[in-house]
Image 1 (tube, rainbow, N blue to C red):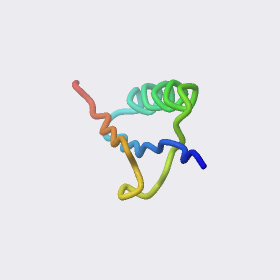
Image 2 (image 1 turned 90 degrees about the vertical axis):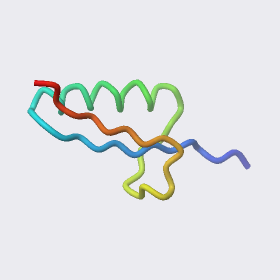
Image 3 (image 1 turned 90 degrees about the horizontal axis):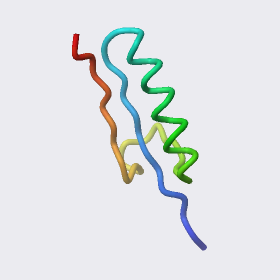
Length: 52
């Protein structure tokens, strides 16, 4: 049985970050990954912050 690779995404900052995070999620899901709320289950952890 193949386990789906999981990622956890944290978005901090301005509303523009929400748009960027949505795009990141779409890309990761299209690549076969699955989002998880449990950090300890994630193979990949992404922290999206604001640079402004």
